[in-house]
Image (cartoon, rainbow over all chains, first blue to last red; front, side, top):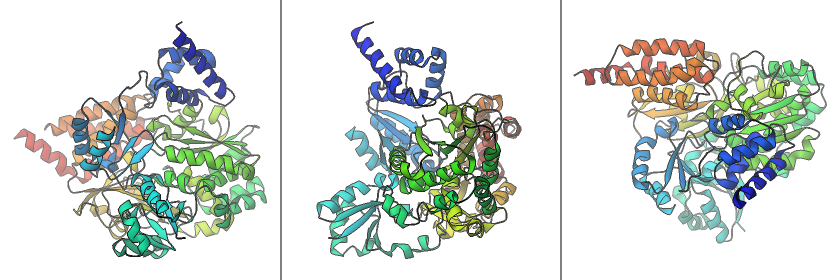
Length: 146
Length: 489
């Protein structure tokens, strides 16, 4: 193991230890790992599985089931645009196509189904920041600032 | 010094409330962050001595302070017809209190329900709940008192209270607003559920798309720990799976597994979280409980119609002029909600369709606007009220595209456990594509597939996807027929 890998293995074991006493710790652990490293990669899955006494298949199954968990890091800034029904009714579909063209490959524009701001769409989220009432001008500003 | 009240609800923040608040603070005003009144088109709504100004931008702040912002002034907020017309039992504190202030909570009747419950035996608490007629607000509408009674009578020292805060339905935000605006109310409701059933621990499973609600609930649970002891509550965060709003899938997720649906029976009330007897209720169900215990079963049951007792926090969403939260007794008609209260569309065009109950709810045409908001009346009209989300579409909507999206969404979110949902969603999308491409006969196949999904799926994701699809085909046939003709020509 390389030094970086050892450090990561150690950090993930500490994360698991922090959550070890709670019931059903896997999701909180995976959230913490992803917050630390931006993804839950194969090496992380191996460490988590070992530390929680689960099989790698079980952990892999959970990581791949949930939309939130990534197996590879996303180096680009991420903008999550809501494209569920309430935002569709307020014009999210043409806006999404426009945003994709505007952002090009510089920004990852991801689809999210509902941010709970359904009376004020189209809506988007960057990190934990939420933005409502988006039109081309407002969304363009967000994209350019990323 | 002028005291200014501005909401710190996520929707207000998304509309710029933080920048408006910062501007007031910079000009020397004392800013108090409160919950949202729920009049979303007016956010950020500024309140000074009970008078409202909205929607406010940072550039409006000086005029508001100088008393020259007449164009933004809506007069006394509490007297606004949108507020005055509501019956706010669950959302009684909305707009009025600071969400994490224990002092505000107590001053507005907080903990009265818990105190009343502590004076009662477990079966007496359950009896109050049964007599209130409260039904599960998550969508299924199962009587809450019966669920609690089942857990109360279940054997074993370890039981759990689980709050389903995985509010994934598009067009709904009442759970989010309650958790962000009045988190202690949910904490109190869960503590009462613990007393009624003998459960010592509770979990709130909140979707990860709600970071503001997660932060508020974590803080509230910490602050209220002494009030609810020995009952304990832990906040858990979902991971972006819509299907985890289904109760058994949520329990699997809480246990740290893939969010796959369980076959029922056994019911969660018998074998729920970690195999133990578990009450699993929606946020709005648990948040209605403190009122029921504090004011009595009859005070709650006095509202509503038929077997739908009490109030429903209706969420007016989509292309609607006056969108927001509207808590009212059951019985109001769909037309009153979207036309008289909601003011029609935001775009100013005619309403063509209204989807009630989220992505798995039926689309209603204006000819069905007389339908009263009531579990049974909506079922009789081949729809559902679900979690109370009402999403309005104007006449530019393409209903064939909406039907297709229902399948697309089901395919994206299916847990994969049962075949009708896993395969049916994909085949349904393909078959709708054939209809759109001009194959009119494929509609028969869609109807047939919907029958299979409705009766063969394990849970409501596959089982209810036929509602939006078939209602679009039934009520808006021209969108499907026209497509077929256009393509054939």
